[in-house]
Length: 161
Image (cartoon, rainbow, N blue to C red; front, side, top):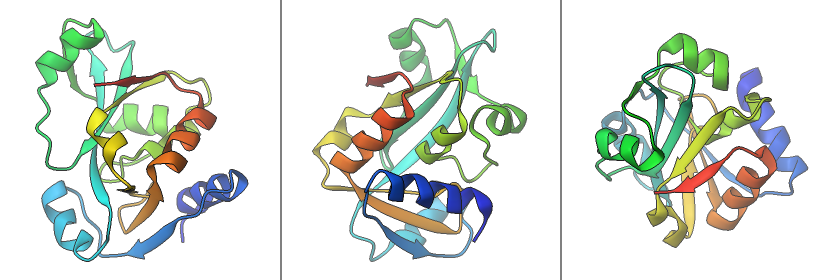
C-alpha cells in the first residue's frame, strides 16, 4: 500500500468513516474502470481536474461516471471564460496525485484549499459512492453522508452542478 493510499485511510479513520476497499488492476480511464467496478455496489464517479484559462483557478469535477460533462457550460456556470484539463504537474502540485488517480481524496493534500470542487448534484441521490483512494489500483466505497463529511473536513469550496 502506498503512502498516498495510507493517508486517505488515516483521514477516514480519524473522521470515523467506514469504508469498503476493493483492489483491482490499474485503470486510467472510466472505460477501463468499468470492468474493475463490476460487482461493486456503488455509484462510481469520474473525476476531472481542470484549470481556467489564466491558470490561477483549479477545479475538481466529481460526477457520476456515465454523465456527460460539457466543459464550456461548466466554465460559464463558474464564471470563467474557458476551462481545460490541467497538466500532470498542476495535478501533482495541487492535489498530490498522478494522472489516472484523480480523486476527491486528493483534497487532503490541498492544504491551502485552492481547488474548488464542482459536485454533480446526481451524487446526492446515491446511497454509496466509489472513488480511487489516490491510487488507481483500488476503489473505496463510502456512503454519501460520509463523503459529505469528508468534504466538509477538507474545507474546499463545493458547488453543486
